[in-house]
Length: 99
Image 1 (tube, rainbow, N blue to C red):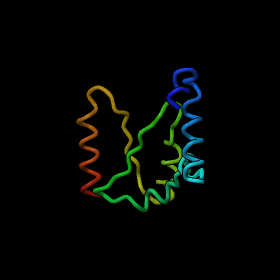
Image 2 (image 1 turned 90 degrees about the horizontal axis):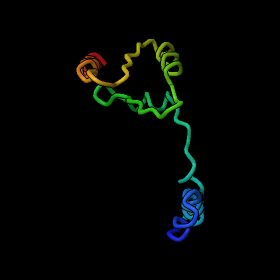
Image 3 (image 1 turned 90 degrees about the vertical axis):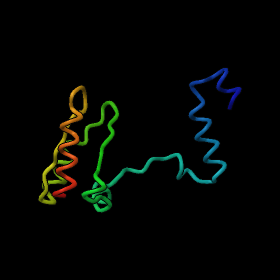
């Protein structure tokens, strides 16, 4: 893989996936499983909140709002940026107190 990285850096990810699949005799470790919002919700608590870290092009807002409506809950969302840390802290503290 080191030699491959020198000559074909674009193929290194494929080589690593292939190496792991062959080594563990399973593709379980290289394939991502879709997360179920209901499973994630069941594991959360007021002191263990659900936090989404997003990548470009991914927006779970509608799915989350729909799930919250089914459960009879509300969602507080905040896009973090300059000057938003105080609001985020307030939202987290309120959620920890009230659930």
